Image (cartoon, rainbow, N blue to C red; front, side, top):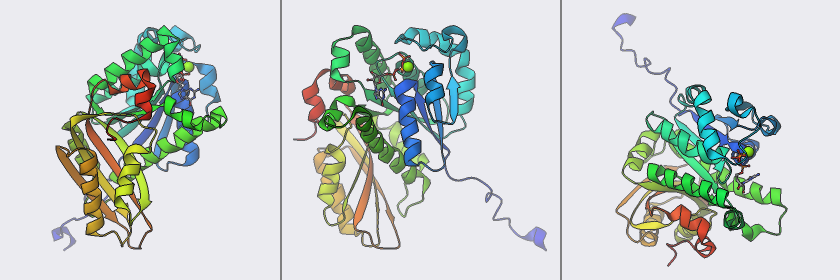
Length: 343
Ligand SMILES: Nc1nc2c(ncn2[C@@H]2O[C@H](COP(=O)(O)OP(=O)(O)OP(=O)(O)O)[C@@H](O)[C@H]2O)c(=O)[nH]1
Ligand SMILES: [Mg+2]
């Protein structure tokens, strides 16, 4: 008798949650991963990759990979991107073997040095031909660093143009914007930035991992990205009675740096309580549309919790960014402090 029954659970053993990793490349990237782990990112695999053995040993990240051991002898690259690119061939297969099973990989690096600047575009490109969604996260150096150091400037320019050429999702956090916290001790300033990065990473993970009423899963995110050119991620949280302020906060009160083309797009996801009404959703979408100057494509999803909530959380992928925007950002501090879309 049992043999006649359908087996509804044949797929029940499938692990439906995407597997996610945060990978720090070089010194700054690995430090940031350490901060993300300290802030808590359950279920996310953390990996630190460096050419500098001493620095790698000091990170608290459990999974550590020393790259280019034979060529660089664990001494780092001394800011030489091309040395890292030669050395990476040696460890490439092992590195990709570890990253490929993951479905989303955030690749974090402070650019300007050799290791992070070389590995970020290299790995983003290598993962492009796999089913893994690579999300590069760059920390743009302080203006004073690039103004007074040609090698650093060239590293930044090469890295940024390679990432822009690749397109897809890119998170750029400008150190120059951290100057608004300049009275804090330096390590605290980077922690502020990493806490913001933590909210970006966990919002994206939460959006694709947990089903919603109007669902945005990993497949729909990937589809959206395919048609969106260069894109970035924004998040915000505000009182449910002020949806316009929520959108304003997500788009402008951030450490992010990006500039819009005249054909932007947006994927918007709202996470709120049982008091999240259709009218609020509509006001969020209207406000987003207005601020982006009537995007080509606006899609949305929502998740409504069983209990009422004071605040509503917004996660959005803004597409159609202007190319070269990131390079502009390092070069002109005025632009860094005033995002182009704020009219
Ligand atoms: N130490 C540190 N540097 C940061 C941080 N955020 C951004 N940076 C910048 O990151 C850039 C790259 O520095 P590192 O990460 O040390 O360089 P690397 O990738 O290890 O490259 P090499 O040491 O040259 O092989 C520098 O220009 C710093 O300004 C941070 O949280 N900590
Ligand atoms: Mg280093």
